[in-house]
Image (cartoon, helix red, strand yellow):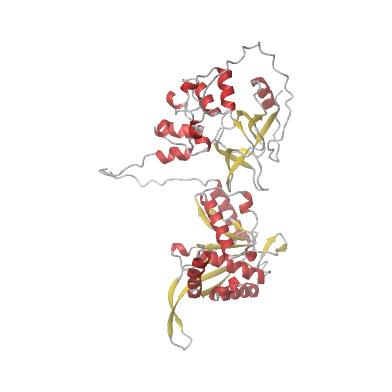
Amino acid sequence: MSKLRPFCMPKWGIEMTEGTIAEWMVADGDRVKRGDVICLIETAKITNEVEAESDGVILRILAPAGEEALPVGALLAVFGDDAAPAGDVDAFVAGFVPSESGVGQAPVQSDAKPAPAPAPAAAPKRIETNRPISPEALALAEREGADLDAIEGSGRGGRITYQDVYQHLQPQGATALRGAAELAPEDLRIFASPLARRLAALHGIDLSGLSGTGPRGRISKHDVLAAVPTPSSAGAVFAPVANTPRIAPFDKVRGVIAQRLTAAKRDIPHFYLRVAVDVDALLALRKTANLVLGIKASINDYLVLAAGRALARHPDVNVQLHGDAVHHFPHADIAVAVASPKGLVTPIVRQVDRMTLPQLAEATAGQIAKAKAGRLSYDDLDGGTFTISNLGMFGIDDFDAVINPPQGAILAVGRARREAVEAADGGIDFATMISLTLSVDHRAIDGAAGAQFLATLKGLIEDPEQLFG
């Protein structure tokens, strides 16, 4: 008897209570190997790729993609070592008890009684072919009597995959969608996710004309959305319309952001320290260092590196506040605020105080890319001892940032601008200045400690060669 295994809504972090299947990368009957991406799960903070923890077969998917959120521990699908009778799967689902801990894919032996033995079937007809085909696909074709000449391989070099044979065997009139949108029969043999099929039906997109970018050439929702035509306004005649607002309720991410920022402003006694910093020496050094080191470090990378060095010298600022206790940390884990498609996120660069500039530039670029692609994991966002928010690239002179609890401080960075300053001889000179504003939690950090930290940070930025010492 095949061992049946539950695939449940995982739990990433103590704050996670529910998640939503954004997209399935597999279908019923698919064989997967350990490490294969099987689905995308969206939470209030992140969208994670979930990998198979062991080899097996997707016996039944129970949670459709793109529908309502499901609690942690909810049964999403049933896996098996091999094919299993439908009755066994039904009994397994009926007897499953959800777990609040977010059960993964630990093997569970089904207690269901074996289904009655089927009548002996004729031995599969052996298929002789010179075409490239996977062993699983060939076995399925022989078992079901599929005509390989009618199947176009979607694998590398035209190799016929298990999914190609499975799709070929589906009845022409079947439809896997529920609701108003119906698929054209000719689309059913195309390897596409259920969400991609629904979107294609709604937008009138012919899936046969699309190239899939997903695993094994699978057409995903992104492939369909990229093919949706953009309305043209050429020659359009606009009639006056009512100025009706578009009402958009908070999504999960925006709701969490609103909740956390409201609590931060309500519960944290903020005070602000401001300083103007001359960055002409840093700009000159950056140009030379990037050329010599063969990197593309940004101004923000230098600021993050300088903050890491300054925090190492001022551990009373490198803190978190938990209840009535201040937690001091030996290293600076700096969160960098990034505007992502899901809203403001703060991925963390670990142990900045121990990094070289090339290491930091690579780490920050990787975290920013993951944030903008919506691929941050829980570990990328958990913790952090300090945050830097830079709006200078948007032309903002200066601003006051809201502290990211449980951290004790956040640095707001404005744009670089040329200003008249007093020269050493008492005359007038011009320098490139940026404004730094340090928001401080007065419960954990005193004003003098914040001021000393800013003075050290200013010195490192205005004499950037210290960053390479």
